[in-house]
Every structure is written in C-alpha cells, then in structure tokens.
Length: 124
Image (cartoon, rainbow, N blue to C red; front, side, top):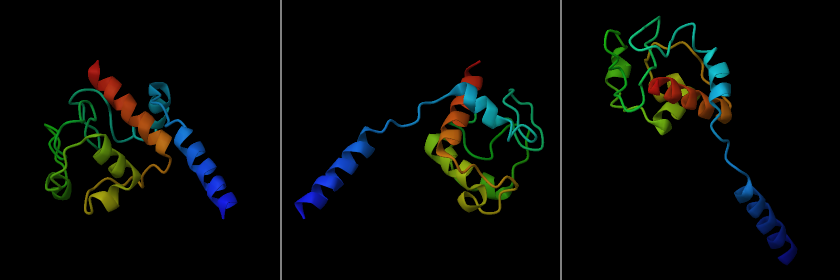
C-alpha cells in the first residue's frame, strides 16, 4: 500500500511540475491560417465571419457592421480567455445554433497560441 501511495505521490508531483504551455504568438499566427478563410484580425474588416480584432472583452455577437446569428447574439457571453477557449474547442456545443461551420480546435496549445495571437494583433 505504501509503495502505491509513493508512486501516486511521485506521479502527482511530476504532473504539478509540468509547465503549462506558454503563449507563442508566432505559433498562434500559424494556427490562425485555419481561421483566415472566414475571419481577419484587421479592425472592422469582416469576411464571412466577423473581424476578431479586439474581440476579447466584448459581448458575443456585437461586432459592429456584422450580422451575427441570433444564437450568438443572445448567448450572453462576453469573450474572455475561458469563453473563447470553450468556443474554439467546440463552437456548436458551446453556442448551439451559431452559424460558424468550423468544427473546433482539439489541441490546447493551439488554442492558447491562437488567443495570444488575436490579443497581440488587437493591441496594434
């Protein structure tokens, strides 16, 4: 029993010591290639989807000059890292009825890096 507890404690220590993926803006720019057919990070330059410039801190569905789906507009979401992460992982599951056809990003590091890229581009 003690051997199992020691092994478990060692495993937990190793997991706790594993660094969380650091934001990598250059890697995020590469991930954005999956988004750029429909989105841009230029201010108020909408495509099929809205511009993502300055999206963090804004209410979902509030991009000026872009007609969002009723589901997105009525979601009550204010985009922050947590809500954006959930949406990027599973757009249809997070906000059913939204019109984004993208299936989502499955890798956490891609999401972290993409959000870092959007933040960096929004500061320019």
